[in-house]
Length: 432
Image (cartoon, rainbow, N blue to C red; front, side, top):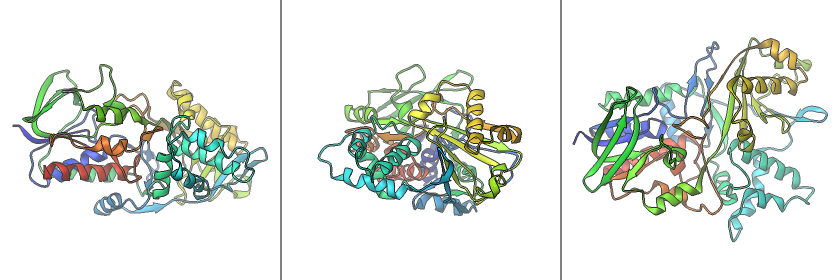
């Protein structure tokens, strides 16, 4: 056969898996539909040397041992996030009083439920509790915003398990962005002899006891078949379950258990816009009261969350909408999204004209419409139970699966979850 293993998808999971296999002298092919590696990690250079714009993954969640090990190996450091947060109220911006830990405490009860239910249904039980109602509202905002989930269908058990694990906590970001980590993995793959196929779309995967035959299409529209003993599939859930012409077909079909798992894992939607200004004007207005602000929140804005790079002092601000708020923006064009994000940020301070006059440029990417991602990252729907584990189970020691959606220890939706599962799938293949 041409290869010992074919890794499908050159995101964090695929790069990690390919590196592990190639380092053990296997003949590895790494196939990526895009013209770049990194997948849903995409660092966009800006005119600000210290602050690239992360169009995709940006933060480090929880202990993230694999991520931090790779960052150290690439000569990178991490920077802790600022914790000062402001919330828009009828009286203007005020210091946020409800934090993530307090809101997450509500979900401790969810872990004791006899049956799973939606986040929506669970939070309704606090509607008449004067003490817990604000926490419930904050919890819903976190589920929508940072889990990118729709509370009407999101599993409260799934959210509770991930929040209680501590792996979902946001604590730091790579200083200089994730791109050096991606490049380090890519360089390790090529140095170990892996063959990289960029702008190469996987169309069909035939698999069986004699190995895999994978039909791929190049940018020139030519089709060829790559053959190997095994394959590791790291494609996002949205791509795996797609049935249109751009999707991937399997022959024979994936087992019913695997297809059921794919149906129970949903892709969250996110709209993210990086706004670059001529100056950090928010630091000097209103007597400098926002000089150390890290986050701004507004439930009435199209973009409910904005964050600065503090403690780095830069002119870059990220606008973020997740879950239903993102869905409401999905069909707006790039220019309209940038305008909404810019106006929303200025209106936080009652200074929309100042924001517009200070505006320099913006960066964004449509992950929801991207045929190679079809969403931002995964979450569990009601009744999903062990869907992540089932999705990650190998098939007949031939097909192996990795990616953040297969993470079972609370790291779904994170870069570290992707890296860890890539490492796990490579180990499973080597042991087969």
